[in-house]
Every structure is written in C-alpha cells, then in structure tokens.
Image 1 (cartoon, rainbow, N blue to C red):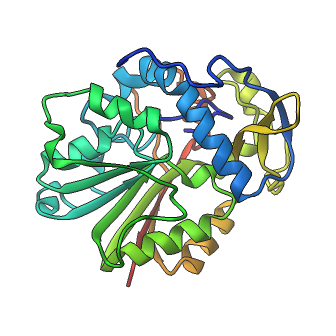
Image 2 (image 1 turned 180 degrees about the vertical axis):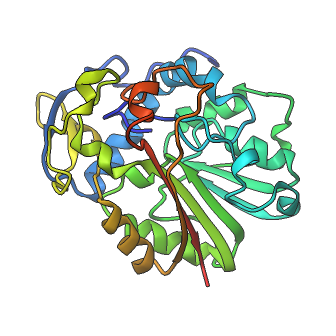
Length: 289
C-alpha cells in the first residue's frame, strides 16, 4: 500500500544510518528510476519495524492478502485454485515479511520472496505462523533487475509491492515476463488509480475530488537538501493496461475488490466509508502467452 495513503504492506534492535530521519516535505515533482529506487530502499529499511508492528496483525503470518479491503487469495483464486499451486515455482515481488510466500509454501508451492529492503526481509525470519521458512527463498534485489535465469518461474505475484514505487513499470514487467515460463501468470495489486484524485483522508473530507486524475507527476517526500526520501508514481487505469501490454502480457482480468462488511478498520486513506463508495485497490491479472 502506498505511503501516500499509508504504505501497505521485532527482531534485534536496528538503527540504520538514517533511522529517525524526518519523513520530509511532500511535493509533486519528477523523480527518475535511480532516485525512486534509492528512496524506496531507504524508506522501507527505516520504517519496516513500525509498519510490521502496526499492520502485522491484519496481514497475519501466513495469509495472502491483496489489499486493505482484506481480499484473500484463498478466496479469490487469482493465481489459480489453491490445489493447483503444489510444486510450482512462484516469485513474490515486494514481499515484505513474506507473509504471502508463507501461504504459498503452505499450499505446496516453492516461493521466492524478493524485496528491495533488507529490513523487511529480516522480518520474514522473525515471524513463523506455523509455516517453516525452509521452503521459501529470500532474495534482496531490485524488481527492475531480477537476478534469475529466463523461464525460472511458473507464477509471479505482488501485493502492493514494487510496482507503485518504480519510475518505469514496463521495465519491471519485461523482467517478470523474462523469468516466467510460457503460460505463466503475473498478478499484482496497486492503489486504485482513481484514488489519486481524492485527498488521503478516511472521513468525508476524502470524498471530494481535489486533484486531476490525469496528473502523472510523482508524489515525492524530500529532505532539506531536496533529495527524495519517498517516491510513489501515479498511472491511470489506461496507463496500467498499456504498460501490461508493452511488458509482453495479456490482461485477462482487472479486479476491484469491494469493501466487505466485516472489515471495520481504517488504514491510512482506506476506510469503510470510502471503500463502500469508491474503489481502493486494483488487481491486474496477466498471462505470458
């Protein structure tokens, strides 16, 4: 999930060089691939402990949750029926603490949990949930430069990981296509693009359009020197579809989860009030033909 609407997604004491740094001044300006990647890695290393502490109970230790609405892969089956996952090689991009990979491993899959943040992956070593980490490989790497051979995986997935934070999503999609076997499925969730037109508020003030949906200028938090400490990139629904096609995939479904009655929590800009009126998450289901 975004930091713009609260980022979606402890072991030993951790004090990185920039721990406790200010979140920075919020602005809208251009931010390239290198600056975005550097900011994302630093931000998640710095905030992983707080994030997992605040949202870990909702995410669970071994659930596969696609977004703040609480849509569970066990129910949705966007990767395919759970029984069909056994023996498959699955790449999770932007895995965080690898909760989704733990669920995949419990179905008999062979998941690789990849994340840019070292501290996020350390949390994967902390949590257990009754599912051993033995069947999961943890990899720290950039989603735009996947360290795997061509055709290494049967499936790839990402629940609010990497895609919203990269300047060139097509590069990521092409890398995912490269490491997938023919017929492989690529499923990823992001903040629903329409949310960029509304304030990030869970109450009534978040229901009035405040910005242009068509303004693709990235959201940036920067320090006193003007260096980005957090970057998130906006794409319209049409942009996402074109990016999927340019990346070499066929879009087979676009899922917009409705807010369920059981979910009464607020999470950043997500809330029952807004969730019952406007979509908060978009899930793109793609196939490598």
